[in-house]
Figure 1 (cartoon, one colour):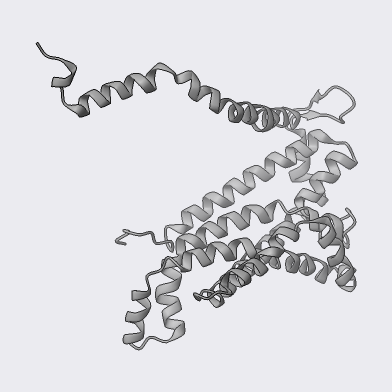
Figure 2: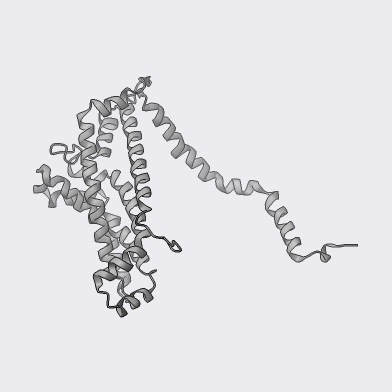
Length: 297
């Protein structure tokens, strides 16, 4: 007669494990329920509502009136301020993202030394990332660069500098990536007589390419959504000559100043499509320059 003790221990353990985890799936659903409720009520629900409103004429006070594709057609073909906002946002993204990443990588390389003060330096450089998006800092920035703000050519540059100043988050990520590069590579390069630039180009950049790509995608998406600085610096107007009329600022103006919520919803979905397209392009181009561990190519 065969008993449980006669069976292999692993079989008994596996069988009991299947019974234990299979008998109470409701516990897992219970722990997942806050996330599911939050996703439905705070993300998927509002997204579905905004998609519907984008096809309506809605002013927040009367019932939505279905207008089909009119909001999208008006934005893309009739509204001149829409394309001014697209241009201002595009310039901001193209200038601020590369400069911020370059500053973050440069500072990360400077403090990438094992020392007691490394934590202090890291905290000091990271602090602007916590403060930079606040209204108070934007007000100070408006006072400091008051002469620039009145000039269309310089107003956008002031906001670029405000964004670049917040390089702490990508800097910390770059620093973590630098510390994962084996020192043996640099030792071998030194033996071969490679200089600092050759070492940076042949070792640091390829080994750090996944981290660079992560920061590039993250900062690009964030730059498309910048709002606080542009709103405070321009007093919510995007002046002068729409040079700081970022896309999100114009969306806010249409939705919460002019109460054209249907039009603002259409703008929101156009932004989503644009950001998704840019992100997909970045992923496609990354095949040519991002190298992962174990990638023989």
